[in-house]
Length: 174
Image (cartoon, rainbow, N blue to C red; front, side, top):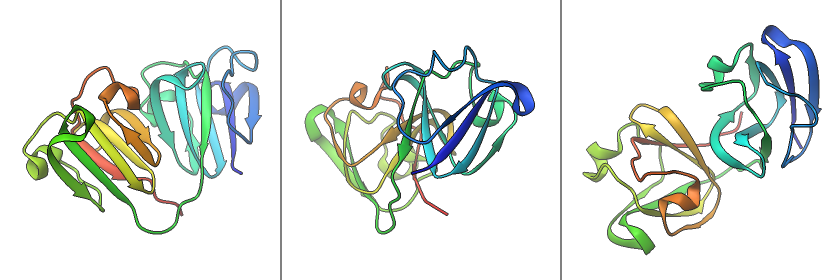
């Protein structure tokens, strides 16, 4: 398993909590989160309990303030460890819900979905191999959505409130 340490204050100060596994509710351990140290593994952080709300994917490293992990505020309420995956990655995206309409398969990162797929919106997808991150904007910016292997029949299945996806990236391990 991995290891992540949450700190209430910036620059790794204040009350802290160490985590080694998935935790559905972090509220009892800290009130706010302003810095994080990822000592091993990769993690998905969620703004709300029970793995809900905005998501942030963090890899090995130090994040001295929430803006370093592209956070919109200092609220982190749940986290999941991303299991190691070495090998090929494959994802199919679809123009419509329930795997209908135009389909395109990716095995590599895509910095600009529209240039490859000719659609701004993705309404469903199937993660065949590996772990992926959807970003709302091109060039891996904006809100992030973590996808593990499985079927996502509608965009809200991966936690989004809209179907706009600008870029796609594989989760790779060091």
